[in-house]
Amino acid sequence: MEVECDNKLISVIIPLFNKEISVTHAIQSVLNQTYTNFELIIVDDGSTDSSLKVVNLIKDSRIRLYNKSNGGVSSARNYGINLAKSNLISFLDADDLWESTFLFEMVELSKDFPECGIYCLGIDQVTNDVISHSIFFIPKDFRGIIEDYFCHAKKSVLFSSSSVLIDTSILKFDSYFDERIVIGEDIFLWYRIALKTQVCFYNKVLSFYIFSAENRAMNKKVDFSKSYLNYIHEIEDFNNISYKSFINYQCIRELFFLFRRYNITNNQFESYLSKLDFTQESLKYRFFALLPNKLKSIILKIIPKVVPFLGQF
Image 1 (cartoon, rainbow, N blue to C red):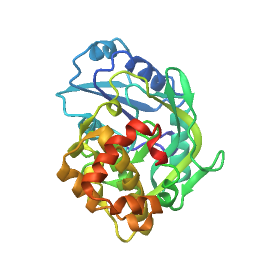
Image 2 (cartoon, rainbow, N blue to C red):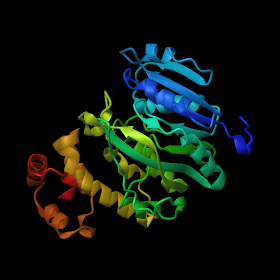
Image 3 (cartoon, one colour):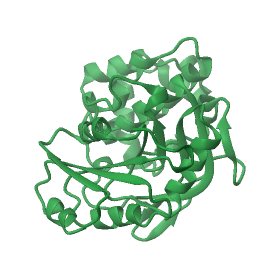
Image 4 (tube, rainbow, N blue to C red):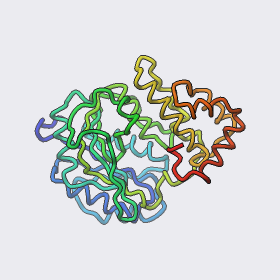
């Protein structure tokens, strides 16, 4: 669909599954946008609560509601992408919120930096009405292209599923969200995008991740085979030194969450370890690498009980 450059149509996609308490607030934050040329595609992924009933009570001509059998959040987002009338697509989880100028700022970024495939704004986390401010390690009010995204990502990952806009006319992936993945499916896509195109970021918080909302996927323990970590080395790019270094760095630190977040078998654990390069890391990680795998797994199971903040290991 052709849209005037200064009045671009934005397709907003909300994947919905059992969010009857939160979804009204999420939808209203979209309808309250100062930028009004958007379509709101809501994909109900087989909800078993009153989510559909709640959405049907909201009347607005820009809302397009679809109902499909349950296939997971990746399936719901991909379903919405295939129905979108615009190449510019933004996502909002059904329990997150936008400030009223979110889409306006996204459109301005897409006009000012048309060479990018992804645009990001700041996002804060809200837990029981308490806001935790994100630290992006970028100058205040920075607005522009991140020249070496994966180098920066060692300090702060900028992307979140409720704070990005992607341009599918530049990206042209056969499939966007990997439907094998339940935890980190969005992370897996952001890395693929950042390898393919330039990244634009505006250090202005206009979205909120509601951590205390009901039915949060990140609060559930899942099989490791459904984690993005199980597939991350499928998108290794050995020509991109920053990416290779970042992925190794990220995977080693995620190692200390494996036994808390996932149901992981010994074979999966050993396979994961075999892909990590500890030689470039600090002395404590190199020492850890020398231990037998069985001892490693024991240590990793004990750490959550004795260390409050695993990231400081």
